[in-house]
Image 1 (spheres, helix red, strand yellow):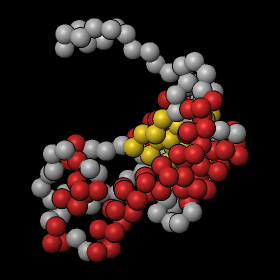
Image 2 (spheres, rainbow, N blue to C red):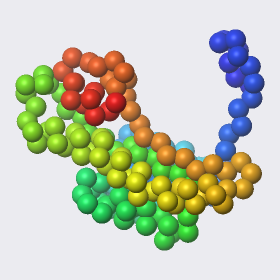
Image 3 (tube, helix red, strand yellow):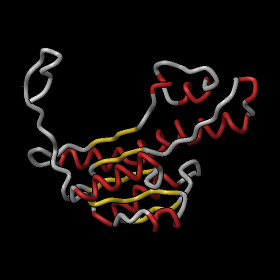
Length: 173
């Protein structure tokens, strides 16, 4: 039951993640690693995307490994294919990769602006484009309670821009 404080009442039906094939991009970062640990403990079949094989091996979570830089052409497709080859399907994608920079807008070089865009926006869009056919297939084949998903993490700066973070705020919107 939920919403007692807000005056709403009802029940929430949570999907079962046990056995679900989930791709986590940015799986060795702070939030990504927490998603990986929690989903693993719930029995999800994980494909762990990271730029670092060393960090991935130190994560301590089992799953298929997908190593690559999401800003590079073909990497999103490679990550999705790793999940499909490992588990035969893809039920969910979590995009936890991110880049941040601080300073006034005048201090940002074009290289920094490009990096923010590539990681925070284009990487997600490339991933979503690559995963959509598999997620659509999972939706068509879903049994009761199954529901494919795609999740990208944002930040409060997307809705309430912060001084010294204008470019980051813009790409996280």
